[in-house]
Every structure is written in C-alpha cells, then in structure tokens.
Amino acid sequence: MTTTSSALENLQIIRSLMEKAHIYRAISAPAALVGGILAILASAWPVQYALGHYGDAAMSDTAYVAVWLAILGIASVMNIVLLSREAARRQQPLVSPGMRMALRALIPPMLVGGCVGLGLIFFLGSLTLAAIIWILCYGLALLATASFSPRSLVRLGWAFVIAGLVLFFAWAANGEVRNLASDLGPASLAMGLTFGLLHVLYALAVVYGRQPLEVRPE
Image (cartoon, rainbow, N blue to C red; front, side, top):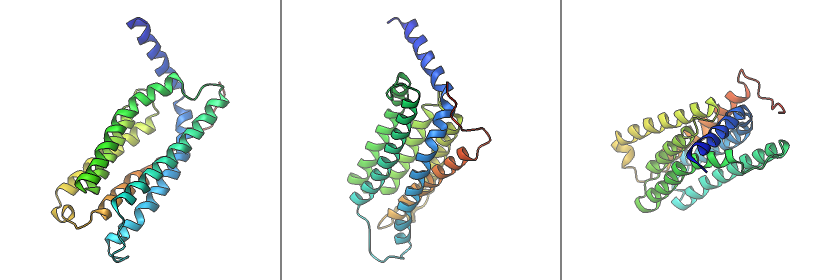
C-alpha cells in the first residue's frame, strides 16, 4: 500500500468515526455513569478512614489496586457490550478499522499510566502520586482521540488533565499531606473527584445535553 492510499484510508476512517461520534457519545454515557458512581462509592470509605471515623481499619495497597481495577473492568466490559450491540445493529464488526485506530491512540498513554502507577504503589508506596498519574494519563488518552471523537469526550479529557495538574501541585506544595503515615485518604479523594465526579457529570451532560441523542439508522 502506497503512502497516498494509506493516508486516504486513514482519512476515510477518521471521517467515519466523526460521523458516528454522536452515537458513541450516547453509548458511552451509561458506562461513564456506572463507573463514576462506583468510583465515588469506592473512594468514600478510605476518605472516612483518613478522617479517623473508622479507627485503624486501613486498606492494603493490594486491596486498593484490586478495587480500582475491578471498577475499570466493570466499566470497560459495559462499554464493550454497548459497543458490540450497536455494531450488531449496524451489521458491522466490533473490531472495525475505526476501533483499531481508536485503540492505537488510547493504549500508549493508558499503558504508561497503568504501569507507572502500579510501580509507584508497589515499589515507592505512593498511592496519591499513582492516582495523579492515572488521572493525567487517562486525560491524555482521551485527548489522543481528539481528531475523531465527540467534543464532549475532548472536554472530559481536558477536565482530567487540568484536575490532575491541580491535584499534583496541591499535593506537592503540602508537606503535611505528602508525609502522612498513610496517603490512602488523599489518593481516594483524588480518584473520587475525577474518575467518580467527572464521569457522573459527563454522563449527566450527555443525557441532558441540548443535542438529541437518539441513534438514527444509516
């Protein structure tokens, strides 16, 4: 395949993704809402623990990672199921050229964020910095799809990046927070405010947005 034909094929894929942007916007809202609610619930107990409401009942680093991986898995499976149903309705394969292009954009920042975050937790014991890395890399992953994703997802990406930077400087400038015996509370608060609250706000904005969300047949 020549460079010209490859470029034309990529342009066609991008055009197709942009045409389907309103469909994915509608499909992604339920998964974002469920994931956001689960994230808020998961962050509530550790924050209460940090405030001293539950004594010494601390959560281990392994349990912390397991909880957030479970939430990621639930939201991802739900998103895949919704996408597969839509693909079946349109009589198209789930793993289409557009899906592969989206994955090529999403995977690098997500992979880096996941690996660096796990390394920070298990080797350096920094839950808060790991949470901030996850927030920033997730935002960058969404922004990596800006050329063909709905504007609402681009705005969500910027919200994560800005929130991650604000949280990083707030954490770095506060020696008392950095030197806590356990940073489970600050880390969970950061996760709840971003992966929880921002996803819930995104889902509500999609549902109650001005543009209609019904999926129109081709």
